Length: 106
Image (tube, rainbow, N blue to C red; front, top):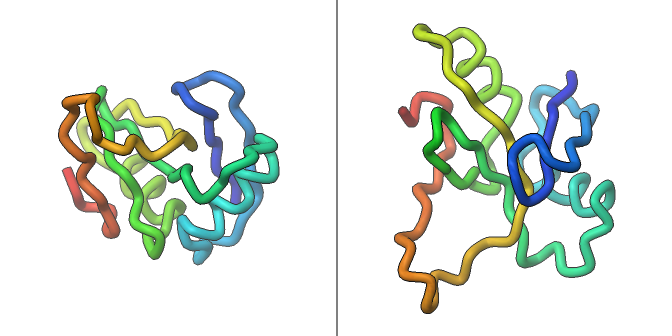
């Protein structure tokens, strides 16, 4: 199966990656690090943006399962997978992202 992942921002530097339906987010992150030539992959994570809200995928989450759920959801949702650095949360003042494992997180 295929999954489209953007680097840093939605719809920017997108790559369509081939992976099995049972591929966990951690393995997909490793594939993204290679495709986007990231020098510090341990600081990056896979996120899904859904209708303007951002969620971090847990390492054991199944991105294809989440994609399938979002494609079948009613009403239709605008979503993008994004590979980007994990914000340290330090001085940014932003709350940490909700970490999701299952597709029914909305």
